[in-house]
Structures are given as structure tokens and as C-alpha cells.
Length: 365
Image 1 (tube, rainbow, N blue to C red):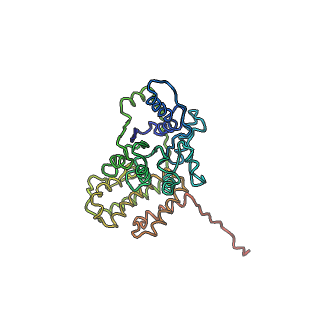
Image 2 (cartoon, rainbow, N blue to C red; image 1 turned 120 degrees about the horizontal axis):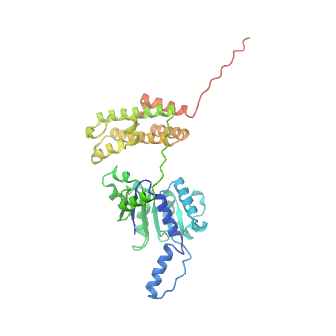
Image 3 (cartoon, one colour; image 1 turned 180 degrees about the vertical axis):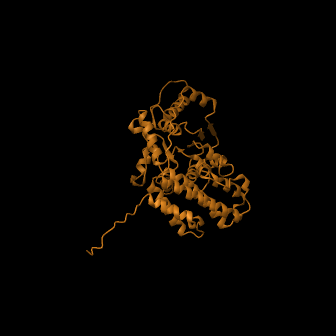
């Protein structure tokens, strides 16, 4: 049935998604064959006459996967011995004419932006689409998101008894933090009613893990000296934003927020979400300056994560983009004017570029 499944971290969300992809792509032993058998049983009663599999497999759209995750799903399917004709089809801007690809059916990896365009231009219609798999469903909390817009078009044009939507998530903390009643908002955006929870402490999951305990290897990679300095600069910028936020609004209960944030707390906690949650009910009463400070905290937390995950070139490009976008805004970010930000940019640039001055003689001899 339609619904949102939330797994604990490390329980194989991509494996589950790959299982559904294989199930719906297989027209002989998968979902299409089961539907055909049920229809045949209702028509012929007790006659055991197998209906031949349909020529066209169901058209199922997979949304929300990154390129790395798409490759991982394909590798999982190949490791299971999945025939090449049952592997998902990847649709990109370079795919050319996409109408024949939709007409042949099957499971399709596609970005939300491309699918919105194709639905609005009638390159593909809701009647052609049999269902959706939505990965990282915890991020779809607003009707303005592209995925929610796609599902709204789909349900408005699809028949009442047709189509399915299945959401997948392995970020349970993300569903509990941020907006108020976030789970309810995600379910409404997905147009589903059922919620399936599989935490690690559930009896079935716990017994399975006890029978086959996972092998855990912990690796600790120390930061480089330049990374350490950049991390300290980001923490200083966070503290500067918090001091400015204390002066700009009195609607926050600072006893529930660690005002003296150290580097570890900045990296491991969603401190910006705690502040946004307190201000959400009075957001319309805040000044643009205060709203910008809250957004700056979110940007700085993103920089904390990017410093660890990105390579030096990607991190420098991210910083440059932030500086470029800030130059054209009506309410610029004040943290970019602090000495910590200036030092952060210099150290990030040093990770990419290194200036070497060569000494040349005057030639007067």
C-alpha cells in the first residue's frame, strides 16, 4: 500500500529501494504478473490458467536520488543478477526525445526538474505513469517543493483508483527536528496516509541484527592544519551571529540553546533548527535583519559539514558562490564582514592556490 517507510540508519534503505525497483521492473515474476494473476482469478474463478505477462512494464518514476545513489542502486541490482533489460533507465537533459523512453515503460531515474517540465509540456502524462518511488522523503515538507508539485499534478490528473506513491527515508531525526508536525506535513505532501517505522530497536530488526551482527570498522581521519583553522573561523562566525541575534530579538529562550557553542556542538547539533523552531510562530513579525541572521546560521552549519565532506576545490567554490550571491542581496550577511570570515576565505584559498615568489637577480653585474 502507499505509505512512507522510515528505517533506522544503516538498515539498508537503498537495498529496500532496489528490491522495489526489481519487483516493479520484472513483468514475469514481479508486480505486473501478480496483478495479471489476480485479474485472471477474478475472471475465471477457480480455473488455473496463467495469463501471459503484459508487453509493457509499468512506468515507475524514482525521484530524490543523487548520482552516487543511483549508481549504487544499479550496482546492487547487478550484484543480484538482474538482466540488463530490467535495469532502471536514466533520463537526463541529454536524453534527446524522451517520449519513446516513457512509452516503453519500466523504472526510470529522473530529476524532479525534468519531470516537471515534461508533465507541463505533456511529454509524459499522468495516465502513463503507474507510480512513484520518492527517496529522502523527509525533505518534502512544503507544497512548494518540486516533488510535492509533481505529486499534486499526478493525483489531480490520475484516476482515483490508479497509481501509487511510496516514500523512503532513513533520517528519523530529520523528521523530528525542524518544522512543527513535520511528519504530518511530509505525509500530506506525498499524498499518503500510512507510516511504517522500522527502528533498530524493533524486535524483528533487533533479532535479525543479533543473528547476523554487522561488522563495524571505525576510521578516524585527522583534519589538516588549514581545515582546523577554517573550522575555528566558522565557529567564531557562528558566535558572532548569535551575539547579534541576541541583540536583535527578545523572542528566544537562550537557556534552551547553548550560547557558548564549541566546535563539536556546531558540527554535531542542528543549532540553527532549534532557533528557527522557536521563532517559527512569530516569523512574520521579525525584521529582515533577524531573518537573515537565522539564515546565516544555517549557511554556517552547511559550511561545517562541507568542510569535512567536500574536497578543497569544491569547498572553495562553495565559499565563492556564497560571497557572489551575498553581493546582490538586499540584506547582506554580516558574518562575511567579520575578521573570522576574511581569515576563512584566505585559508580556504591557500588549500587550492599557493603563491611562490621567485627571487631574480638585478643583472647589474
